[in-house]
Length: 163
Ligand SMILES: [Cu+2]
Image 1 (cartoon, helix red, strand yellow):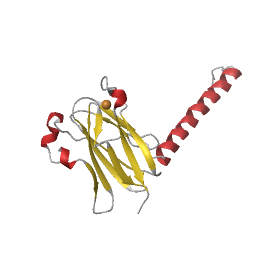
Image 2 (cartoon, rainbow, N blue to C red):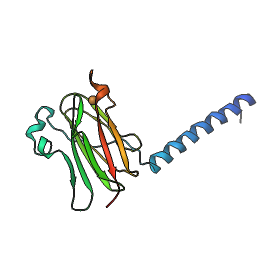
Image 3 (cartoon, rainbow, N blue to C red):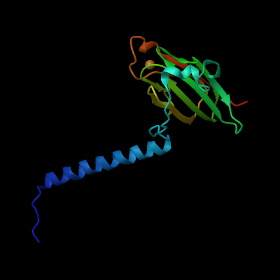
Image 4 (cartoon, rainbow, N blue to C red):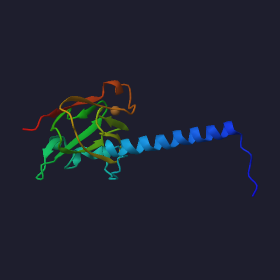
């Protein structure tokens, strides 16, 4: 059997690079599982120009609702330049399902310190489920450039202690 000659130094670096690649996979897998980081996968279409005509996203029906099983559903609309309602209150360590639709252009949504992050694409309903593990006030920020007022597009998430 003939074998290809590989310089010992090159061999060392093949191992070094291979080890770094495998370590990166392990770290990514660890955080994906430990912090439940995964891409949002809800596919549900809606006419963004007629949100106010729907039952779910009509202005009077937006906000936080408690479900029969004790979890919470938050319904929001993203529009230039804000999230509506501008503040939501949810309890800590409780399942929270956020459903949000854009009224106009592409927006993003991120609550730093949690795994709540999604794009809000016009024409689709974005859905993210999470449980906040710390009490306090957290910003919900738009992280997709949506126009001149993008910098001022944010809402507040108030996570309350359980009663
Ligand atoms: Cu925005």
